[in-house]
Image 1 (tube, rainbow, N blue to C red):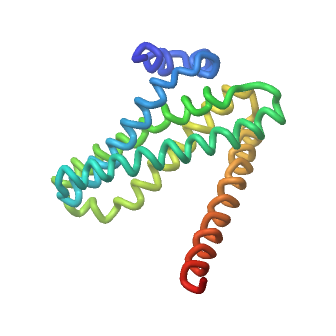
Image 2: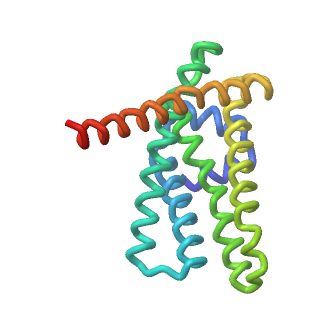
Length: 185
């Protein structure tokens, strides 16, 4: 598992293709756990919460990350397979898990900001930068995995968000409808 991460740094393109074929789900779960741990630790260090709040935050972030990545990898893979005819959804799920390692930067920022409290004013900017870094990382991996140009990969990624947005608004509509039904029925 760690040799795969090491090889990813040394030879990204062949390692990405190997990850897409081998579907190392343990590596994906490690990435999701480290990403969730980093977010929960950064939040707990900044807010000074206890162990129960840390565990609750970790569990919520882990569940949300895995669900979003699962849905995104399915929709992105379907669109990319229709256009390129290659790739695997499970491999894309693993690559998204590896991209979660970018969230470790949040812990480093929080530790530095604890010594220099004025830096906490830039926490939203750093969160946005980490999100952009993770997005660029995903774009890079998808470009090598599916053999697309940068523009085509970006638009494929953008289009694959459409089903997620539709499902989000449909879920809100169903929830509001259920609330009205419970109140007025």
